[in-house]
Image (cartoon, rainbow, N blue to C red; front, side, top):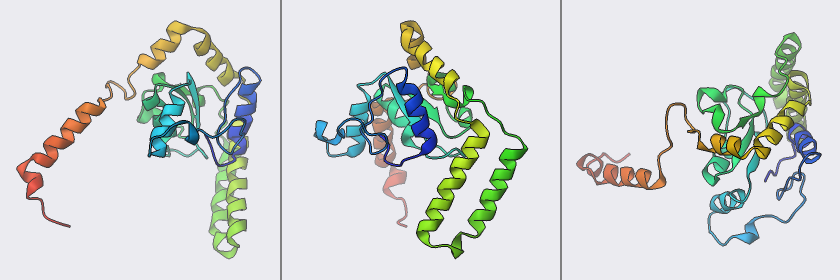
Length: 214
C-alpha cells in the first residue's frame, strides 16, 4: 500500500513476486485498484486495516533503515491479523517480539563495516550542504544517499528472506504459531475494550476532573 517509490522496497517486491503474486494497491508497484473504494469507513486507517485483514502477509518495509525509526507500517498489519514482513529499524527487537512477525533484518546479508560507515559519513557531509541546494535537489540527494547506504549495507539479496516467507506460508502450524506470539516480549497486547475502559476510568477520576488547564 506504499505511495513512495523506494528502490530497495520495490526490488524486494519484484523478488517476492517471482515466487508468489503480491497485490499492490498503492502508487508504488501498482498492480490493482486502490482499496479506498472497497470500504465505507470514514477513517482511511480503518479502511487500510480492513484491506490488510484479507491477506496472510503484509510487506511492511519502511522508507529507510535507521536505528530506532519505525512507524505504523509494522503495527497496522498486526492489528489487522496479517503477519508483517518488516524492514526498517535494525533494532526493532528492543521494542517488539520479533517472533510475532518476519523480521527481514534476520534474513538479509548485513554488511556493517568500513564502507557502510564511509557512506554514513558521506551522507552527513551531504546533508550539511543541503541548505545550499534547491529543494528538489535536496530531495534527490537524500534519496540517492539512502539507496547507496542500503546497497552497501544489505545488498539487494532477498533469497533467504523469500525462503522464510515460503516456509511460513506453506506450514499452517508455523503460520498459526507466528500469529499467536505476543507483539511485545513477555506481554500480551491489550484488547481495544480494555484500553477504552482504562481511559474511561482515567477521565472519570477526580484528579482528571480537577487537572489544571494548559
